[in-house]
Image (cartoon, rainbow, N blue to C red; front, top):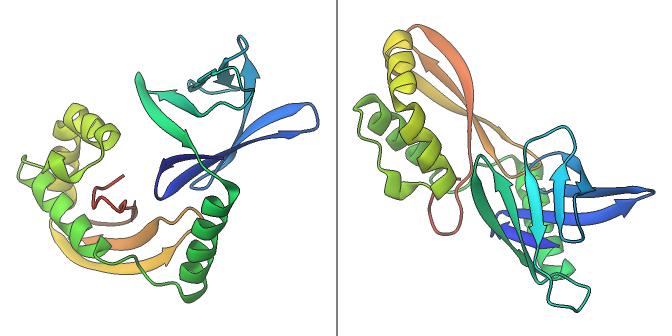
Length: 184
């Protein structure tokens, strides 16, 4: 078990002849070996590199996606079980994480103004938004200002989903915020 953050975990496990990455916030992905410590995600562009300290149990790893390394730190199974129990409780009552609607509204306002607060975001999101900001701004201009936003549910990965009604369109958006308060 590895932690990507306090709200995202990856379990590496074997199923028959297959080695899988099982993400707490998404689907399972099969990984194939390139070498003893380097693996690639079958059918994807991600790679995983495990640290080799000679113990046979990698103390850490890096998940490479979109040209960026996301560190993974080994954790015990109890940490993952505790996270999953808290998530199950939230899913049963279908309540949003504290502050996600306000955070999503601030994100939209920053994008619409052309000045998102990148300090509110984890690095991968900040990098993607910097790259695509003009596209988001054009899209938001086209669909108009927010008319309403309503919590629609929490999924198995801990993402809060909101139905967003804008003047010229309706869509669903998702958000997850780590304990550091940054949008993932």
